[in-house]
Structures are given as C-alpha cells and as structure tokens.
Image (cartoon, rainbow over all chains, first blue to last red; front, side, top):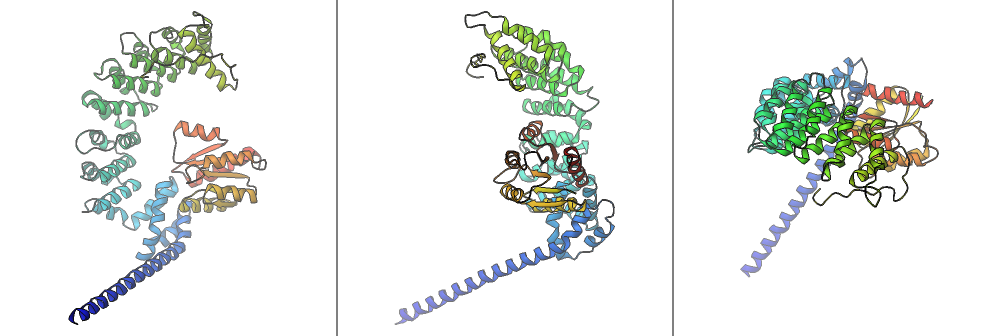
Length: 380
Length: 124
C-alpha cells in the first residue's frame, strides 16, 4: 500500500517535472525565435544607413550620425553585418566604418577585451583591432602571440599583419618556433603584409634562426621582393643559396631569388647552377632563372640540359621554355640533336617535352608520338 | 544603364553591391548562389555578370562557364569577385571566360567603375 502510494507520488513528480521541462524548452525556443525576429527587424531598419555609410561616396555625415545614435539593442543587431563589411571593403567605405566603430567605442572595448579571461573574447578583441588597424594595440597583440590558446595566437598574428607595424616582425618570426607556435602560413601572410620595412628582421633571422624558420623567412623575402629597395634581401638570399647549412633552405632561397625578379638576382642564380652545388639547389636555380626572365642565362641553361640525373636538365628545359623565342631556338637545336635509336637521348627528350608545352600554349597540338616524355626516376 | 547579374552568397556583401550599382543607375539581378544566378540569367539576359568565385555548391567559375555556353550570355562581360588573389586563381578565372577580376577586400567605388569599364569595352 505504502509502496503503491510512493510510486504514484514519484510518477506524479516525474510527470510534473517533464511537463515543466517541456514548458521551459518551448518557452526558450519561442523567446529565442522572438529575439531573432526582433533583431532581424532592428537590423533591417538600420541596414540602409549602414549601406549608405559604406557605399555613399562623400556624404556620409547623416548615416554616420544615425548609426552613432542607435540604441544598444539596435546596434547589437546591426553590428555583425558592420563587422563583416569592415573585413570585406577597403577605401572610403572602410574608413567610414572605422570612424563609426570609433564613435561607438568599439576600439576601447576591444583593447580591454584583449585581457579577457575567455579565449574567445580575447580572439574577438584581437580580430576587431586588426580590422580597425589600431596601432596602439600592437604592444598588447605582440604579447598575445605567446597566449596559451593557439586560436588567440593565430588571430593576434593576423591582426598584427593587418595593422602593419614592422616592429612586430621579430615577434612574428619568433612564433615559427618554440612551444607556442603559430601556423607558418599565417605568419607568412602577416609578414608579407608588413612589407619591406620587415626586411631587416627577416635578414637577421636568416643568420640565426633554426632551419624551418630560415626556410619560411626566405619564402617571405621572395614574396616581398617585388618592392623597391631589395638591396639588403638579395645578398642575404645569395648567401643562403651559397652556404646555408640546410639544403632545403638553399633550394628555397634560389626559388626566392627567381621570384624577386631583379637584375642582381642573376649572378647568384648562375653561380648556383655549378656542379659543386647539390642537385636540388641546382634544379631550383635553373627553374628560377626561367622565372627571372633572364635571356642571358640561355647558354648556361642549354648546357644544363646535358647535366647528369633528371632534376637539373628537366628544370633547365622548363626554364628555357619560359624564356621565349631565343631560348626556344636552343631547345629546337637540342631536340634535333638525335643521339639514340629512338630519335634522341634524354637531352633531346627534355627539349622536346618543353617545346611541346610551348606549342600547346600556342594552341598547336603536337602529333601523337612526337613527344617521348622523360620519366623521372622514382623518388622525384 | 545596364542590367547587372550579381551572384554572391554573403548577404551583407550582396546588399552592398546591389546598393552601389543601383545608386549608379543600374538594374541589378541579385542571386544568392550559382544555381539561382543561372535561373535568373535565363529569365532576363544581363548585360554584365559579377560572380563571387567561392560560393557553396556551384562556384562562380562554374557559373561563368555555364554562362559562356549559353548563346544569349556567351558574349556578356563577366567579372569575378574573390578573396583569392594568387596568379594561378586569376588565370583559372580568365580561362573560365572571365573578363576581369576584383579581389576582396574591395572598394565599392572601384567596383562600380570596373563594371562600367567592362560595359564600355563591350559597347553596351
């Protein structure tokens, strides 16, 4: 009897509990939906002013005033769109948005947010400061590169690149090694955004960093090489090609010289085709000569077609292919120089393959069987 | 003034482009993805198309190729809009039949000018 009553009571409590839980869930969902609809309505009201602020050419005073005067709720509704557009537009539209965020005190909030307890809040703050390009945030963002959270470190690195203060270059390079690293591609992008003023730090890192760091550094020097004033970068890369302890760094430095594309890059690359250099470095140097567009390199590249192995002659043929008509003539001579029973040895085969690509690019399809592709040995 | 097809999956960016082009006096056909863009273009032939490269499902490059295959849109100017600025991506876009490339982040004013430039070049 007692047990019967007890089970009824338990059942009743359970049913009431379930009913209450259902009510809480339904109420929560209704409330969430109502809020989403309200925010969408508020955002829709403010949206024309936001578009007028970003897209309006010169007369942005009224939209700026309207958006600055929005209530807290209205601003919260339109802010995600404003942040998205801040990341996607440049020029006057970006400047107008940055002014709006200034007026709304977002930069101050973000600066305070860099010290927040939560990693998401710190990352959000760094993201906003990067978008706004706030130079006063640089010292604190540099400290965030050592944050315990890897996402925060990555966002801080991106933000430092966006702000573009070269003082951050050594810290960014430092993130490539150690216990608290940032993925190399993020660091590379940030360093490229810092541009030529970051070069002294990059050159210094070439002299003392670890091999993986040096490899990334030579890549960045190659990417930023198009800018004027590459005087300090070319000798540093030439030294890396000639004498870096790591073969991978030497090969990447040769590639970087090819990307830089200045006249001073020619001699170090020609030197690096010498048989005294490792095969990987010679192959990269040959390919880089093609990228450099140096017609003076044609005789050297033509000789390299006869180098032993696969990589060096193949790269030399690719480079000749890129150098235009004078180099194509050298390829034709090599292709016609039949040495074997099948119409030529490896030299002719490399040359024919390169010429076939030239023809394809011109829209001419070579006859079937005209090209015996040189197969790389296994491991290439 | 011209009819401009705008395919962009991000509604904020799409709205901004529509606003800017309408402000310049053009009629805009907005589309939130590639399939919708092709449907819209089939209903009303645009004078120029502005296509985001990275859209879910059908990419801007796919839309570009499809527009080039249709006789009525085969010759319209096409501008690609993308966050990818590498040379190889530009080449891929141009090989797909695009006439011009705009890289994000973009200047809304430049975008309008680029649209008008390709229209002038096409004689529209």
